[in-house]
Length: 284
Image 1: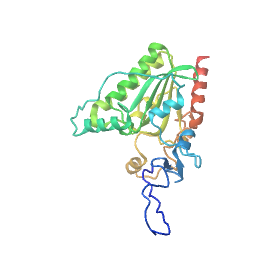
Image 2 (image 1 turned 45 degrees about the horizontal axis):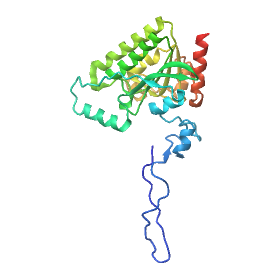
Image 3 (image 1 turned 60 degrees about the horizontal axis):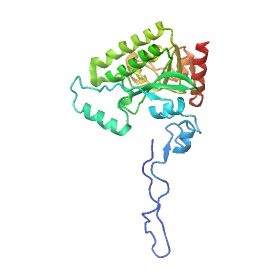
Image 4 (image 1 turned 90 degrees about the horizontal axis):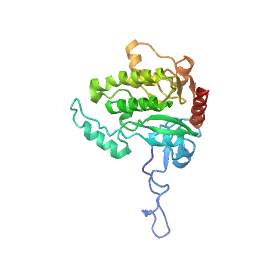
C-alpha cells in the first residue's frame, strides 16, 4: 500500500513554541510503500531495483504490465500490437464505459492486457502481460481478442508465446461475451500446439476464474511466482461450498507445484533467464 501522505514535522524554536513549519516534511510524498506481508516500510526506488520484491520477507509485489515488460524484454525491442478495437457495453451496464475511461486515464492502458513482440536475450517471442491494475485483469471481449490475435501472430511468424497471467476471472459486465473468451483463447492455444510452437504460461498473483479455466492452464510449461494465489474460485467460496476446512496453503503456487499443477516456482529475479533457457531448450 502506497503511503501517499506523511504528517509534517512540527518545528519548535525558542521564540515560538509549537509553531508549525508548513514548508518542511519528513519524507517526499509517494516515495514509500508498505509491505503487505511483513509490514516493513520500503523505499520505492530500492524496491523497484529489487524487482519489486520485499528484501525483508521475499513478498512479490504485484507488477504493472509496463514494469513486467521492462523486466523481461530486452531494452528497445518491444513492439506492442495495435488492434484498434474498443470495449463496448453489451449488457448496457450503468457507468461501465465511464469506469473504463477513468481506468484508461489512470493506468495509461487501453485494456487489461499488453501484447506484442520482443526479445528475451535476443530470442524473439510473442508476449502477453495481464495487468491487475485494470479491472483486476478481468477478461472481456477485447482481452480475449488481443490474446487470440497474439497467438495467431505467433503461428504466422513461428514464434514461441509467453503469457503472464494476473486476473480475477471473466468480466461479468460483459456477461456471456466474456465467458466465450475462454473457448476462443483455448482454441487459439490448440492451434499453436498443432503448429508445434512453444507456449509458456506464467501464473502471478492472483490468477483466478475464467483465465485459470482456459489459456492459463494450457501451457506446455506452467511457471508461477512464489506465493501466487491460483485457482478457479477463491478459498472462501470453496470452503462455503464444500463445508470443509481447506489444507494449509491451499491455492498457493507452492501447493500447486507439490500437487503437479505447476511445473516450477520461479523467483522474479530469475524469471527472464529461466524463460530464455526454456526457449533455447525447445529449439534444440
